[in-house]
Length: 238
Image (cartoon, rainbow, N blue to C red; front, side, top):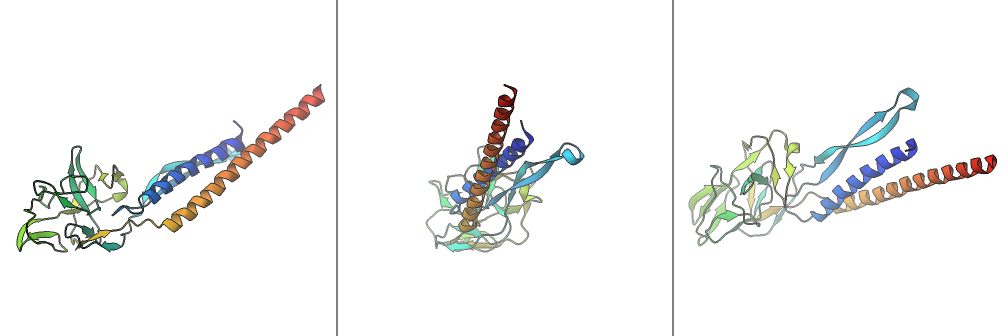
């Protein structure tokens, strides 16, 4: 493959990957607690000295950990994290972590996510309420029902949040050991909004489309140049 085409295709592949990430950000612009992502690229050099060529290498994704704004819903079981930390959720695959605090009670009175997975307290057990009394949740996560404490939401954090892998919905998994958040800051009756900025995402998408089209044009022009050179050589040698 021609060097020019290889470099151009490398760039187009990187832009395609970046476009997928932007599309996913836009799709989750209204997902509570969602963190926007960016592709992390690295330069890959091949060749020697003056013939050295620069390619684009996809080195993974980076997550924007900036806290989103709080949207008040006035639902007593909605809880926004106004700072660091993640809720712990019990799933069939093991414990997972989320910042989506859109909770509800299932038929047994267990506090669960919108997908029906139990939310764990700071002792590692599900939180169970009667569902008949007035529910209060303090900024520290202490849950009371009609003034009687029934549990406490456990917020955890990790040394390197960038290693967390996003799974279905708003859940994350990680091999790191969870550590309790020293000073939890929760807001009852609210949800943390996604930190995705749709206008910025759309602007970047337009720039990517233009860059992709420019690379396609470059490859086509190179093909045309090679074809004309071949036709000239053929005609001369005939």
